[in-house]
Image (cartoon, rainbow, N blue to C red; front, side):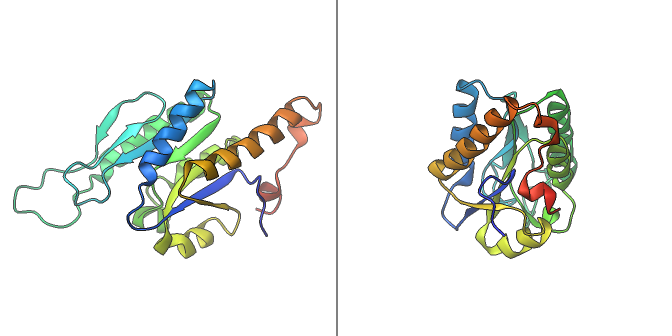
Length: 191
């Protein structure tokens, strides 16, 4: 089933595309329009990238995500503790209220049900839409994780804007309705 107004969106990207730039620009645009986006946007592409960090969308704070394993170290240097600390800051921001949650990646840890998965659950439980960058080679894993209840978006700002506009219009109509508290999206109903 496909629901274009599903509150959970996977922005699927191919090698060579930069989902971080798309998400950053989208978050800035939402902020200028008066919406509160919270979450993480990654700087750098991989855990072996010397510049890997994340920016908290809601505060602009940049957080390093790599461990210093020495000059001869090879392989992934992601500091999972730092990533989870950043996740804690996002969780606090969700509790303070948000219009959208942005999760930087559906990576190996998220595929295994760890990492920042809990933020997706927390946001959706609070009826806050979520967008997450998903590499194309992990899309099948994402569909299993999301139990098929996700919109698939192209890695482009226009796709994000179209999805957000549909959600915003639906929510504006619901806010005007006295039945707002009883509304359940198609995705939520089928969970």
